[in-house]
Image (cartoon, one colour):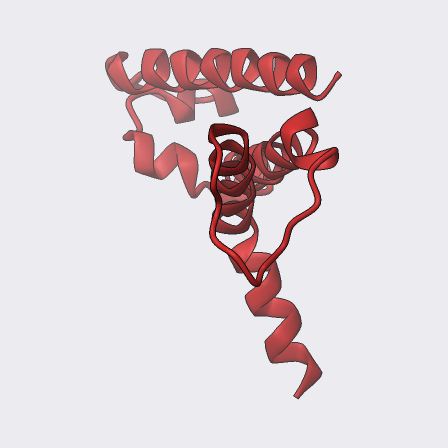
Amino acid sequence: TACFVLLATIIHVIGHVQHMAAIATTPVYLPAITPNQQMSGKTLWDLLFDPSNRFAAITGIVALWLILAIFFTGSDAVRRYTFDFSRCPRTCADCKAWLLILCAGFFMWPVLLCRCGRDR
């Protein structure tokens, strides 16, 4: 099920990126009366860091980041593998499990960094 959650999230994010690209390529609407008209012609960076929409794009990126970590650790290669940190990986299955756990660690380092800084 983690694969389907990841797939649905990626499709959702692609839809948002396409929508933001469409907004960024439209000409500036003058006189801009409604909020939608005021949004026309903004750059992608303005739309991404826009406080008027509660930074929804940034929170969506963080959610996708965490779902990727869940996807990597939800794999059978990781869940059914016993990690022995005293020896190097020897088989292809070992390398696959180590690669997936390293990818998950890459996606989780901001969370771990925040937790370590808070404990002090």
